[in-house]
Image 1 (tube, rainbow, N blue to C red):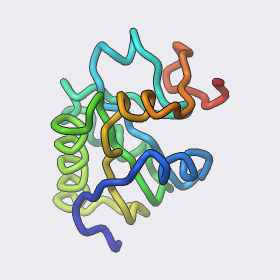
Image 2: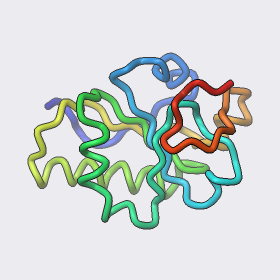
Image 3: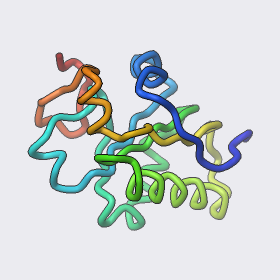
Image 4: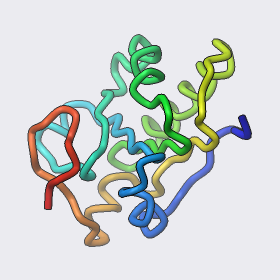
Length: 131
């Protein structure tokens, strides 16, 4: 496993990653996800209660190589949850294919403001077929 902590990726980089089956987008916003849009295909694990769901998240991301975490701005919740998940994998010595744990620069708000595609479905998890 070549994981070395958490790094940041730009929205432009994530656009090319969204359709890659080895990448998972992890949205850690809390209630605002219900009211706002989201990145198509993203998984939602609210930051409040995130720690209790670490085993579930590890199972849901099995087979992925890259995880992209984000919250609204990716200044606190996104990076915190990304580090927490990285620590969890290291501490539990989970058998994981994840090589890279990243955080979306400027978060969902920056993604949407830059004109990137968003989804407004209410599916959980999002099936990624939104426009």
